[in-house]
Length: 410
Image (cartoon, rainbow, N blue to C red):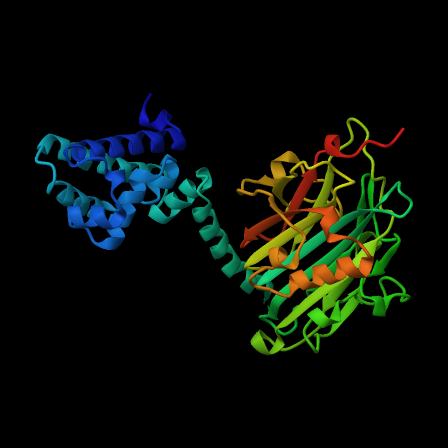
């Protein structure tokens, strides 16, 4: 196979295997380099701290694409070879390290215009979450300027509970947008959308009410269902606006930019008798969704599932792109799933455990809502998904396998 015939992945694996094997051979008489800390390796080879740390990472990472991110440029490789010469006097072995370093640089030139572009290609192949977060952070820094708005943390908690009729489910939702601020004063940003996704359609005409007792009796949709004691005072101007398929949406009005206009917004509502609480064999998963629409440093998505609804089956957590969504409520395709490492943390339903560092009082809002609704926190299993710097627009999804749902009593 010629160089031109090799894929990017094959070539990176080959050059990294060559480079790491040559380095380990040069260090053979000095013991296993991974038995030493980066600081110890730096001292032994006479490398500065930063280069020594990179050197340790390129040897330690099992994933060749993650390791390749830490291969230095030609000058850095030259310094590493000088360091290796302190513990290895075999010129042939050192020559193999030098040749492997050159083959790596040729691989960079073959597949990218520069090292920065090559590193982007590497990051797209690796499962290294630190690299993924760094790139998402860069995306966040750019997109907040494009959209003209940013927030510290976005939160959503669904509480799924059997309805009073015993046949259906109630779904309460507590939403938080914390540390939100405009970067342009006239950003017409939608801060809330209330819809119900049933298995076969999306609608806005469903039995819903505010969690806050002070708002009970008001016409749902006429005003945003805030939990005032957990919001900024005063809140910015927020207006109801028309939206697709009759959904209820609220839009941020004009206001000051930056810190002077910064606000926290927490809302709570409950939808009654949403759908059957029971599942039949072959039914699709029960999906809980969190649409991420505001550039944010972190999202936290919790689902509190009543134990009489589903057995203790950990849901699947995933992130899907909304770039190709055709309309409100359209189902994502398998190719829309974004390869981000996600997992469902299992928590207890208590304020101390549900607390989020960026918003300590949010857990109290959830706890207060549970009490207001007359539900017992001990009756829930709690699943959490936490994502730093999520791409926008995306949707986080928890999928509960219908096979784990409680069967309908005969």
